[in-house]
Image 1 (cartoon, one colour):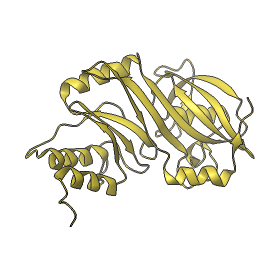
Image 2 (cartoon, helix red, strand yellow):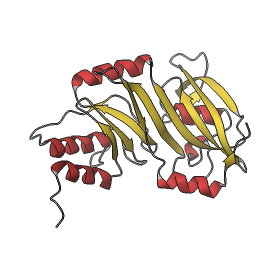
Image 3 (cartoon, rainbow, N blue to C red):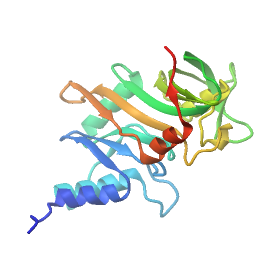
Image 4 (cartoon, rainbow, N blue to C red):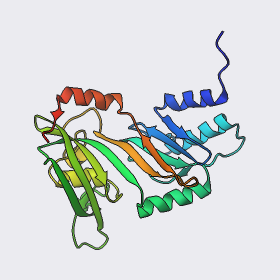
Length: 245
């Protein structure tokens, strides 16, 4: 006879049903992998989001009768999957938010599958602002009041016919930054028609690794999110080969 499942086991099962995977957890933070399609925070009425799921997880796993604190210190776009860290206390949230704002000791690494023929490596710098044609997208307008300096670097790890896989390191954290900057450079993400990308089952962008300093212990913390099945299948379908060099 199987042993009875603990409340935490049931809470993990409920999270898993929504595609959320807990990768590390202690008294101060939760490191997790968010699936594509899930909002990070509240949106239209009736649509479930990550914070709501984590509050329910904490209530069940820890036996909390009231509201369970979940501090969202950064976000991923709805259609982006991958590594995130949330705070379990207000003190941890303040310290993590400040660390992410200053970007000292923080590393954010993404994997992106793009159209075109990207160079072996590049650093992109643009001044991004809301598009006048579509307020939900970003475009480069240097010198425009309100334009935000945006920087990222990438290395092309693998290539196929008119496609490549990039390992992207963020220098800043702007809305739609990766999507907009790669499109401006002529390498739009696959599955991103808003920015001119080619066809794919989903937006081909994954937050692979997030590294920072623990807000209380002061030790390095690293969250590495496994590649979702849809992107692993896309990788195989594209027939990519390691890039030279």
